[in-house]
Length: 105
Image 1 (spheres, one colour):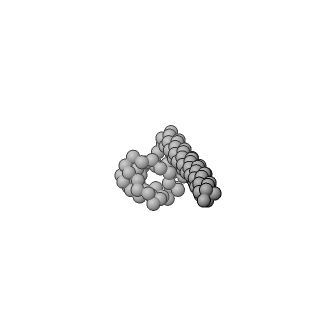
Image 2 (image 1 turned 60 degrees about the vertical axis):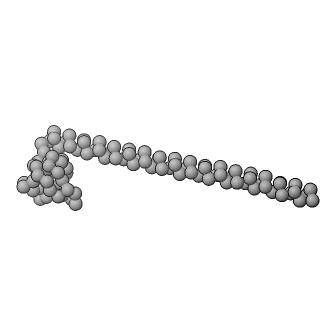
């Protein structure tokens, strides 16, 4: 694996790379001197660390969104349960009223 920086816009690994983007390529045979430049070891480590931090941030965002979606789903289920319970109570009240009316006659 080789860490490079785009010195001109280009496409690698089905992704458009802008000037200044740092990314890894599969090997020396994938290197293009026309639009890429090799990164020094410290620059490559820094770029790798940045990529890992970005991946972690994305994973954190996805986890947060999933938790929020699960919380909303749970809240909707609780709301439905509450509504169903209230409907049962209303049905029981109506049934008692009908029974009282029929007893009065």
